Length: 341
View (cartoon, rainbow, N blue to C red):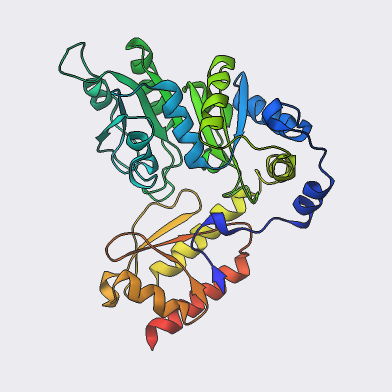
């Protein structure tokens, strides 16, 4: 099988496995795991933030941010198809007691004026706006890169209103590699950032949240409350160090493979590329094949290709480090063959 369902399915490299085996460890709840401490220092430096915290997942990192920035009864603003809104089990309401206020964006980017108008006035009838959440790259928009200028405008609006800005940067390094803008520049227009080590960067588990020393101090308590205080976690942090040292620049290969895949799929009768492919995600509209998204997925599975449903008549393909250019060509041949049956 050639698996293009997600970049979360990558397997740790031999180098990552060896790093895990050889990792120097201690009790991270006491702050005594040197490998975790090293990973957090590297991440904070790359983002230009004072401190960072290793967490179990991107969802946990986003929820810790909401719990730290907000209090029950507050409201956060986010794009209407944001991962935090659609794919995290309503955790900001279930855990933080926070109401979401979604704003329709274009390719994942909210209009700054819409954001400004959504910030609540000081009125007894309204919740308090305590957080604005951005997402870059934007998953549901097909890996779209939210422009730096858009982030900058929203950040300044937030600061003028005394509202914090959190970036769900699960695939932030994809945005940086594709745009040529450093992650530090993107992070400059945020108070806090979350990014995943376990997606395109290829580590088997874990994410990072970063911000000020005060934020991380509070975030550590929330991580503990959520059951995320691990012990000798250097074993899973060590592959994260390899990911940050070895797997950032190579994301360009995934982007190139995604473009090759998109171009090839566009030339197959009945398929339409539904997004502007900027990074490693390709969305396909299969309506004209006469197949539903689930039927299409089962059809290509029969040829040894895995993809994911992404709404009515839409299918998602995600390129990653475990799929080569040659395998992308094979995928195109197999899909073409499947649809001719």
